[in-house]
Amino acid sequence: MDKIIGGKLVADALIARGVDYIFSLSGGHITPIYQFLENSKITIFDTRHEQAAVFMAEAWARMNRKPAVAMVTAGPGFTNALTGIAGARLSNAPVVLIAGCVGLDSVEKLDLQDMNQLPVIEPMVKKALVCHIPERIPEFIDIAFRAAMSGRPGPVYLELPCDVLNAAIDPAKVKKMNTTLASKPVDRENTRKVVDLLKAAKNPIVIGGSGIWYADAEKEFIEFVEKIGIPAFTAGAGRGVISDTHPLCFGSSLAIRPGAAMITLMTTDLVLFLGGRLSLFYIFGDIFPANAKFVQVDIAPGEIGRNRTIDLGIVSDAKAFLTEINGILDEMAIGDTLKKQYRPWVETVRKADRDGKKEAKTMWECDTVPIHPMRLAKEVNDFMNREDDIVVADGGDTSTWMGMTRTIRKGGTYLDYGLYGCLAVGIPYANAAKLKHPDKRVLLIMGDGSVGFNFMEFHTAIRKKLPIVVVIGNDQSWGMIMHSQQLRLGHHIPHGTELGWVDYHKMVEVLGGFGVCVEKPEDIQPALEAAFASGKTACVNVKVDPSIISPGSVALANLGGYKCG
Image 1 (cartoon, rainbow, N blue to C red):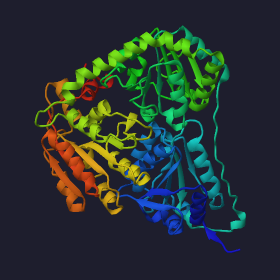
Image 2 (cartoon, helix red, strand yellow; image 1 turned 30 degrees about the horizontal axis):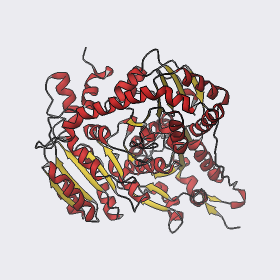
Image 3 (cartoon, rainbow, N blue to C red; image 1 turned 180 degrees about the vertical axis):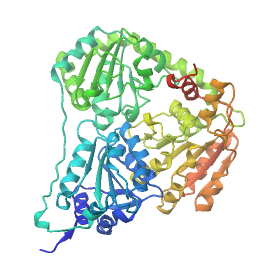
Image 4 (cartoon, rainbow, N blue to C red; image 1 turned 180 degrees about the horizontal axis):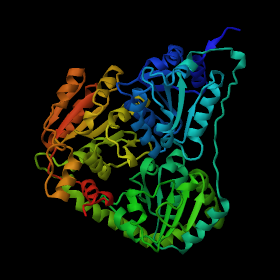
C-alpha cells in the first residue's frame, strides 16, 4: 500500500469528525495539513491575526455548542493565539487549538520559530497534548475532541511537530479512532431535596447560566420556571435561554443592569444557581444574603462551593437535572401550590423591575450632543428587534452600556467577552456569527479603543463577503480606564487614556465597505438602516459623550485589588 504523510492523517481525522470550518492563519509548520484540506469538505477560514482566528473558533463553538477548530503555526503564531485560548477557558468554549512546532530533530538547535510551547499553554487548557508518533495522530485528535466536550466544555491544545506531519506512514499501521461523548449525569437523590427547599421558600429565584445553553436545556428551563412560577434571571451564555420578554424572566442577573436584579439578589431567601460561576459579577457571592439557602448545580464538581458555602451542591448536567426535577414536581403535583406561594414575591420583583427601568429612562432617552452612550445602546436595541437578530458587544464602557440595555429573546443571539474581559473579540465574533447565520442581521457595537486591536478583520469580513454592521461608540479615549482614574485619582492620565478622533468609517470605506459618521441621536437609526441596506461590511462611527461614567468604570475604580490604600 502507498505511504501517506502525517498531515493527511490530520486532515482525514478532522473530516471524519464532521468539522466544517478551521479558523486559521497560514504558516510553514502547518502547510502539511493545509495541502490535504484544500478542496476537501472543510473550509479553511483565514484571518489577519491568529488571535482573531481563535476568537472566531470560540464564537463558533459557543453558537454551535460543539468543538470548533483553530489552527496556527509555530512560535509567534502560537503566542498570538494565547489570548483567545484564555478567553475560551473562561467562556467554557470547546475550542481545539492545533499548532505546529519545530521538528523533533531540530529541538535546541535554534531553528526558526522554535520555542517550548507546551508548558506555556498547559495551565490555560483542559488538556495539552503533543503527538510524537505520526501513526497516532488520529488517536490524539480523538483525545482532543473528547476532552473538549467531557464534563464542562473548554479548550484543548494539540501540538504537532512539522517532521511528524511530514513523516511517511504505512496506513495499515494507523489506528483510527472517533468517539463522541454524550454524558448527561444526574444526581437523583439530591435533586429530590431541592423540592423541600422550594416548599420552604417565600422569595426564591433561579439563575440560568452558560450550562443551560451548552446542555441544550432551554425547553426544560422554561418548563421549570413556568411550572412553579419562580422569578428567573440569566447569565453568560445562558442569556436568552428564556426570553427577556417572558413574564417570569427579569433579564440579566448583573446587579448594574436597570431592573430588578440588584434588589432581588439582595433579598432572596433561596437561590437556585444552575450552570454558572459565582464570580466577580456576584461580588464573589457576597451580593446574596448570608442566610439565603443556596443550591448550586454544575457538571464540574470543582465549581461547587467557590466563594460561598453551598447548602445543597448537585453535580449534574443542567438538562438532566431540569428533566428530573420537572418530573418530580409533576409527580408531587405541587406546581400550583408553589405558584400561589410565590405570587406576592413575583409582584415585588415586577415592581422592582419597573422602578429600576424608570430610573434609567433619562439615560435611554437622553437628547444631548455628544450622544449619551446609553442612548446609543437603546437605539441599537430598538433597531435590532427581531427574535433572531444577533448583537455582539466589545469594549469596556460600550459593552457595559449594551449589557445594561439589550433585550435578548433567544439563546445564542448575544455575544460578549464575559469573565475574561478581553477587548478585540468583537469583529471576529461578528464574522463568525454572520458566517453561521448568513440570513440573519448581525450587528457589533464596540468602543473606539477595542476597534484598534483587530481592525484588519474588517478586511476579512469584506473579502469573505460577510456584511456585518459595526457601530463604534467613539469617545476618543480608553473610556473605562480614563473614568476609573478620574474616580480614583481625581483626574485622568492623558498618556495611555486619550486617543483623539479617528475617522474609522472612512478607513472601512477605503477597504471597500460602507461608512457613515453620526453626531446626533436622531440620526442613529437612519444610519443603521443605510448600513444594512448597503449589503456591505459597514462601519457606523458615532460620536458619544466622553464625560459619561458607566457603572463598569465605577466598579473598576473600586475593585479590591486596585484600591489605593
